[in-house]
Length: 87
Image (cartoon, rainbow, N blue to C red; front, side, top):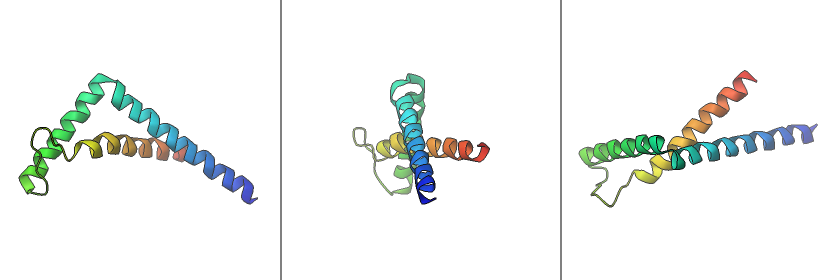
């Protein structure tokens, strides 16, 4: 019985990884989505500058990697939760 449960966990993990990679591909290769993510990154940079937590000055963008990799992660987690919920 543990084999079936273990197999189910591997399938769930594989599903989540595939969802994340698809979301990441959409962000990286669809121009309007990339522009939206870039605007979100600039807004977070402005917030970081205003609060003094980090300084973003043109070339150096402290929020860009977090936004580029984090937003698809959050979207993949939501889609994964919805798939598991309605399954």
